[in-house]
Image (cartoon, rainbow, N blue to C red; front, side, top):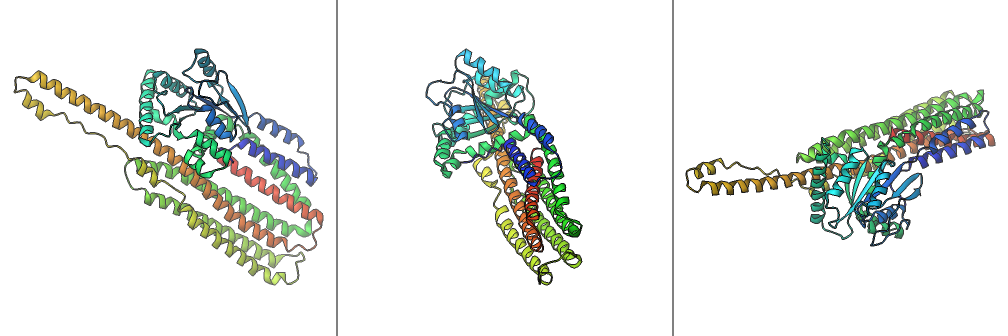
Length: 523
């Protein structure tokens, strides 16, 4: 079963391979072999790594196996990881390290690995093994190094939500104390992500291909968090340079293909396809930028509304309507441009067209476009409005109120008039201290709830952005494919080479679209 972790390097290497194969089959009169070699070398240098770290027997190896979907790391009830184990997963390095609360030599082994890896996955379980100042100090040490940190609570014992929340609060308190020693400033909860996963359930769901188990295990949410963190690390950013070089090569091949494919008698046909393809890429890039921008803008707005206790239904609906409406407008605009370009071409074309096609093609393509618009709009209407599962976050994570601690001034004044003043003052002081403890606990629960809201918003809006992009791309590409299919019917004298070049040109165009999409995501 596929993971949700995006392996950008593998995706780009696949596009490079496709481009090289198309270049060879097209036999165009340009030399880009040196460029291909340079691009491949730059891609190969990028190898993001994830380090699995944490307490002994918390489930690090099981979690690693769950991501693989097969048994890679040894799993046992007694500590077995006495050395660093490296695993190649696609173009990632997954590293399993000894636990922090084991033999001192194991601890030193794990410490030496910290600086080598891009993302740290610190695994604890729902027992009490996490509850130590030493564990908290190791977490703070990772924060000091500014490493992306995901704390994974492996729900091995299937603890209830109350138990899991107590673990989270206690861990936060321990981290806070350790952070103060290291003089870390700012909101400590923003220095790490926290998520609950059932690693055993996730592994079983992957191996047995059971969707329900995967959903209940929350492993897919963890994979989304890992992808979000991967976008931020410098290693993935290094992909941008070879990616841009590959885009340039793809454009060069596309230009040569177009020049070879069309003679002077087909100049108008070439220009029509170029215009429509350009409008397609422009529409897709603009939609992707708009959806990404709106996701980021509304994420902060929704977060502030939730922690303020305000209703978010209107904001959620506004986001859906804005994205939905923009997709509709862009699809309609693209369809209108296609129809206008096609209609103009029919009137001015000098090349020979199929019998009776000239009189019927304009109305035929208009019908095709209208059908595509209706279909895409129906999909948008039904899908985008149900994408954002934000309300359940508020329902499952109520914000504890801040306890108002009175100074009991009136009571103190009365007691000053009595003889037993000292004893009563001690009692009042004890009550105030008890209330202070309650307030600190409530504040800690509130901070953790706010962090969970931020995490869940990130996950839900990632899904929203992903699905909205799918709808946008499918809508634009459906019209593009139908229009270009209609145009292709006009050429009755095309030879085998022209057909081959057309196919290669279309595939090259698809590669360019994919490359620009990935570039937009990791920029």
